[in-house]
Length: 196
Image (cartoon, rainbow, N blue to C red; front, side, top):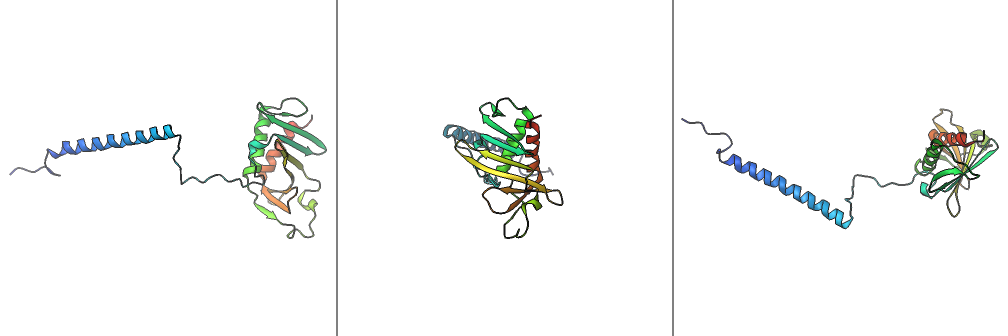
């Protein structure tokens, strides 16, 4: 008695291989046609799993719209301007590449880094700005667009845990508690461009 091959007849195996190969080629051609259609129309597939960017920092304007920055610390004042070549001192003279990189990052933090907490003036009743290191501030930063000033922030002292820093925004109520790295980046820029 002869044994029958498992899974059907031996002649069915080549047919299955051919049909799998044909399906693979059909899918590959369909994918290429889809890519060609995207190239021709200029459309990109929408990634629904990706969250669209939303400015969560204290500055709603794009970091690219900032063309001038004023830094005031310990009685010293520096103004930096940005053009197509990058950042430089308004009074003339270049700044080093590291200072330029950090300045761009600091501007971006104002746009992207959400405050940890906002303490409204009603919560601060009886507390003076000096209690938060804001009178006088450790550092004052003013950012300007092409047409007008965008924002002035004043960085104060760190919170008791040392994880965050107090910050006030001119024209806005209360005091913000912001991640320490935001103020640290601005302090690093100020240190690199301060007069020697």
